[in-house]
Length: 234
Image (tube, rainbow, N blue to C red; front, side, top):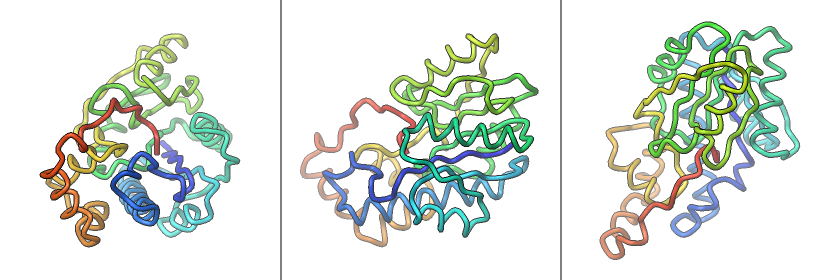
């Protein structure tokens, strides 16, 4: 099983956090989350290689530092990036791929190993949805190009349909540590209330962002309400 991690330019990441984070803070936070995800994948039994798909030299540098391979993409969109990675994995003989987004700050090797273990023999599709069962935070496919990738709004249901179109009954796994992706200020609050000590949380606390968010939430609770998540937006 290969892992595919599409990561957009750090400078463009997490625009929906602009109300509470400055551009430099969003970049540093995204880097911390991506590092946590890649390090967890590197420690996951059953993951043979990690393939990062990105057009950002800064992402390339980070990926190579953790031993991941990199494919450059030309900003063709998330689905095009994932398809590019899946095609590369298939041509290199991979039996399956695990598509993982870079904004899963609670991710850990045990959670990824659970997905790999439950996935089963080809042909197979396994979806780990977000907390609203809207987005597809992780997607395992065997063979790598088993289905058409349909990340975006309501991607969980879209991937279920894509699998059934190919005659594959997909499996859905609810894994709490993979259910939180970060899109809104409310997601930041959820992260800070979790029992977790990864790089993402460490950055929010050491930078003073966590303390500031706590004060802002007390002063204006409505500002921290979460919009409907789109999922798969790393």
